Length: 211
Image 1 (cartoon, rainbow, N blue to C red):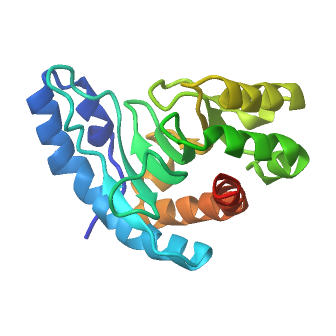
Image 2 (image 1 turned 90 degrees about the horizontal axis):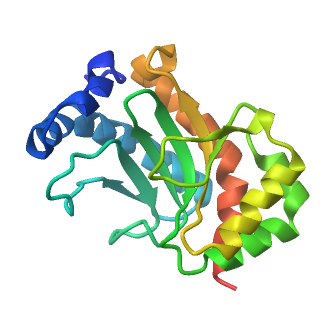
């Protein structure tokens, strides 16, 4: 039986030391990612009609600084996810995030951005009204979609297209106190609902990068 994420899971990020924090992430958080993945992967496979694979962040390259966030990613490749459009669920110390992620390692990100700009109205209409947009997966900051105008969206997409390190992540953020965060069943439903809204965007990105 796996529960949702408790207050103590978010407090992992206050633990000093790389080994100590990683130990806690591995013991407390990663089993919950594995449990979520077992439910979300089949859902996405059904929505996308393709095989999807779960990746749980190992933070293996870190030698000194402990991670400030941790996540699971779901992508169509067994070998990795960073060079592909992918889905993420993860934690910072003060929120849980549910993203459709296009990060800077994407070889075809300019093509994807161009397609989003060319189909701007459809893209904006596909964004969840109560959602968020992040322009950098390594920073905690994100913007509420409800507080952005068309100019803000266009600027974000143009930056994503033109700046090598620029990124575009869209989805939702939930507070640790949110009932859905603490209840696995409710969290699975929120994740599924969010991803279902974002599937058209994912499909457009995949089509654009394969042109």
